[in-house]
Amino acid sequence: MQTNLTDFIKSSPEGQEAEAILRACVHCGFCLATCPTYQLLGDELDSPRGRIYLIKQVLEGQPVTQKTQLHLDRCLTCRACETACPSGVRYGRLVDIGRGIVEKQVGRDMGAGAMRYALRQTLSDSGVFASLLKLGRLVRPLLPGKLKLSIPPAALTPGTWPATRHPRTMLVLNGCVQPVLAPNINSATARVLDKLGISLVKAENAGCCGAVSYHLNAQQEGLDHMRRNVDAWWPYVENKAGNGTRHRVEAIVMTASGCGVTVKEYGHLLRHDPAYAEKAARISELTRDISQILAAEIGKGTSLFSNLTLGANKSKLSFHSPCTLQHGMQIRDVVEGILVAAGFELTAVPDAHLCCGSAGTYSILQPKLSQQLLKNKLTALESGNPVQIVTANIGCLMHLQSGTPLPVRHWIEVLDEKIEKLGRV
Image 1 (cartoon, rainbow, N blue to C red):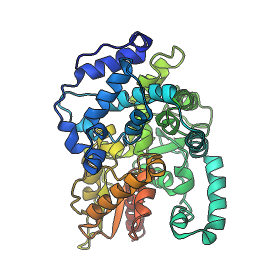
Image 2 (tube, helix red, strand yellow; image 1 turned 120 degrees about the vertical axis):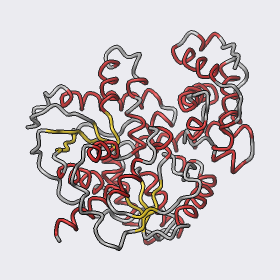
Image 3 (spheres, rainbow, N blue to C red; image 1 turned 60 degrees about the vertical axis):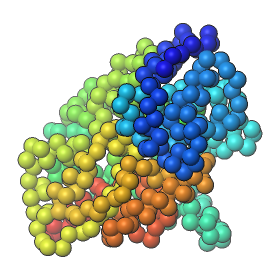
């Protein structure tokens, strides 16, 4: 694609990156068939190709309107288009750049700006989020139906977190909403890894990965979250944590794929920060989804799963692969392989590449489109009559659970539960 960027952007690092991405696009249109919003709305401007044209116009100095902003806002950033693109167009980065510029030029009205500010401050701070959720649960019986359903019930008490006792040590991201909504996910991960001879530790000062702020166009605020996590993790990477951890961590484990895809990009996003570029690149290099850790151990011939396939009655699961896992991190068929190896039966899921509509804060800011996508996704997930649905991201988990009576859980919890039951037999 030919470009002629205007002076305000062309010499900046963002402008140079955007121009390279734009020039990679060959207008083929393969992305249209994979775009959830284009499938729902049928508008070229609500497709990746259309949004690329809009961003190109912005970068070339053409007038920016609220209509431009609307079409960019409607993008889920699911990145299914990146998986389909034969030219390797890094659409996710381009839309972040475009949104940031449009935000500065168009702005928001007071209500929309306040909503986005509140989401950033609430969701990225687990203490604030926990307090507000507790208050919401107290008044839940008094709320009308739809609003009542939006407040999740209290989470189950997490099980025991094993003591640090193995030479092999890994870090885990605490996160922001996951410890409040589903604290057992990281505890289950610690128990499974403990049985593989790996101790899982957490750095208390590490919190939100930065995705919430960054994707709501408060990009400097998001980068500050990233720097804080780098600072919290770096003593463990250097083996100078001073908390009894005897060995340098060999990986940083992600149990929420939405966080994982962001942390994997720390090195790129902080590459122009002289104080953090090298450290951030190392953090990204160490980052692994929990499925990658377990798949590697299975590849080494671990005996952990040897008894899990015994018995004729297999639990029938439907696996929802989050967009951040299959398109963002490009991890496909790995979780499914682990679950099959552990003796679960997986149902077929039609159109598994399409987004469920959660997409961070999308379900709050674009509720109509989000609910349409949720309905379609649940129809696909329930088509094989599973006994429960499993996924790999807390946002998807809560979104799916809001629309189905079937239990929705993180797949590592289901695996941990099966291992524990077999250990008691």
